[in-house]
Image 1 (cartoon, rainbow, N blue to C red):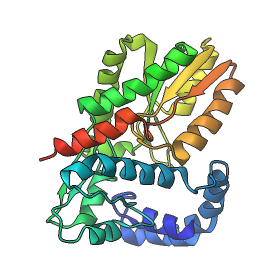
Image 2 (tube, rainbow, N blue to C red):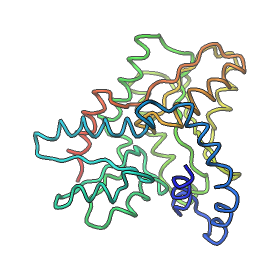
Image 3 (cartoon, one colour):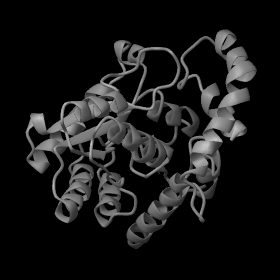
Length: 287
């Protein structure tokens, strides 16, 4: 955990502070306490196969590979931080013309651009797919399946990963793309603006991040009389720490503690058939 966090938080795309200022703080303070806290959180969601994010990513690659095998296209998967690394993935595809598909639907310098940093100039990269019809359709299918089984909630909360506000002020398109995704999805689901909320989660550090924040929004909804909320996370294509622990455990506790009665954390796209087909379509439509 410490090695992973050291790699992740050392990336200047992730923490855009001067290295002389940030690295002593990272190694002198953050990496002495955060690994233990993160380990406790991961323990709450760990599976027999390992990290949910790694498990779902591996399965997605396998299923996509089966579809694309007919076109003689090989599929390899990698993690931006940790193993298998992007370098490992590129090595397994040596001799092939490579298209990289970062599994971040909305572009941000801290995510997609960080992937580009390690790909090399000869690799074509799909920058985002935040408004791709197949991606939106796969999201809608997840929500509609849940509603068919459980009915609709008082409010659908669309929670995206947060980003420091400073990054958007400096021109990062992430927030605008999140809003586009949410509005298109709401249109496909045929829900009015009053029936859904767009929020941002996973803050880190004292700086102001994109608002409204997810957990305070859920608490306010409960205090305002909402009995049930459904939370979907369109920015995550696989269930992971941020969806399974932060949303399904911490935010559930906050909503119910504030007087809410029923909290539903919807699954991510994971291995849903619509999503695997969407991946193939996104790759086919890439430049």
